[in-house]
Every structure is written in C-alpha cells, then in structure tokens.
Amino acid sequence: MGSGDGRPVDAEAMIAEAVKAFWVMVGVLAVIWAVQVVNWADGYGLSVSFGIHARDVGDLTGVLTAPFLHLSWGHIEGNSGPLFIFGFLAAFRGVKKFLSLSALIVLVSGLGAWLTSEPGSVTAGASGVVFGYFGYVIVRGFFDRHRLDIAVGVVMALCFAYQFTVLLPHRGISWQGHLFGFVAGIAGGWILRDRRPRGAKADRTEPLTAPAGTAAVQGSRADLLKELDDLGL
Image (cartoon, rainbow, N blue to C red; front, side, top):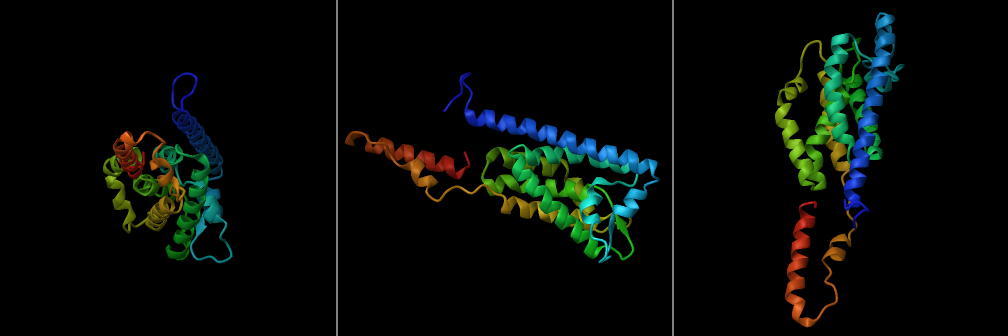
C-alpha cells in the first residue's frame, strides 16, 4: 500500500518513529545535562546521595537515579555521545518498545552493580545504560531477522569494538554496571523481538484464485515470498 505521495506507508511510519526517537534522546540528554549543572553546583553531592550504594539494603533508590548522575564534566561528556547514538538506534523502530528496554536495562544494570560492587562504593553514571543499548543494537537484527538492523549491529560492533574491554574488571570503573547493562541489552533483544502471528507465513504464501495453467507461477511466487519472510523483509 502506498501513500498519496507515492511512498510506502511502512516507510512513513518508520521515519515518524525515527523522528520521535531523535527527540526522545534530545530530551534525555537535556535532562541529564540539567541535572549535571545542579550536581556540579552542589559539589557532586547528588551523585553521592543518590548514586548506587553497594549492598546497602536500606538504599536501593540509587538504582533508578544513578543513570542521571555523573561525577565530573569529563564523565558526562564521555557518556553523552554514545548514549545518544546507541539510544537513537535502539529507539528508531519503536519508542514504546524502547521505553520497556530502558526500564529493563536500568534495573538489571543497577541491581547488578549494587550486588557485585565493592562494599562502601558509590556508582553513578549512564554508562551501564549505554552498554545496554549497545548490546541491544548488536543483537536486535538477528532476533528480528531484519537485514538492515543486522548490518547496523555489525557496523556498531566493529566501530566500537574497543568498548568491550570496559566489560572487564578495571579499578575505579564500574565494570559491573557495564557488564550487567550489556547482558540486559542482549536479553532485551530476545524478550522484545518481533513476534509474527503463527498464520502469517501461511497467509502470505497462499496462492490467489487463478486458472489452472498458472499454478506453477503461483508456486514460485509463494516460494519467493517465503524466502523474503525468512529474511525479515
């Protein structure tokens, strides 16, 4: 089906979601930078008070607030670019799904850091969420069987391969939050994958009513449609 200007409706919908994803990430960064200004003016007291306090049973709120807090200007500058890039790529196929993914990553990354970081340590920053989006972008295409998303995931993995080193233990860096965020992103790719109705393939490959002489042509068309469906197209 096409629109009045000749473009497919599906393409228009995807462009609309991409625009929404862009502004969602602009809004997220605006909030994080606004919080940073207040945090800096307070001597980074917000990061200490509302960060993740490892294994402190009486204070789990930091799991939800820590991604919005940073410990220096260099810290937030280092996170902002990757957060926008991976966040946009994770959201451009659907903002609603992206919000569910974000909730999963924040919880798993935060709880993982809370449970496994050194006692008495405080963790803050959006890097766990960044790695969550990174993991999701890498695997989404394979789970959804979209060739474009597979290509994007491979390119991102190759371009940012150096980031995998941060998943290993480093003194002074919350590698735990990075690792759990990355795992959460991969899990999110599976949990939130596209699920086609069971009868979808049969409906697409069912031949139209036609004279008997066209049966072979219909069969070839059905096979082609099935192959395209298997490729995620």
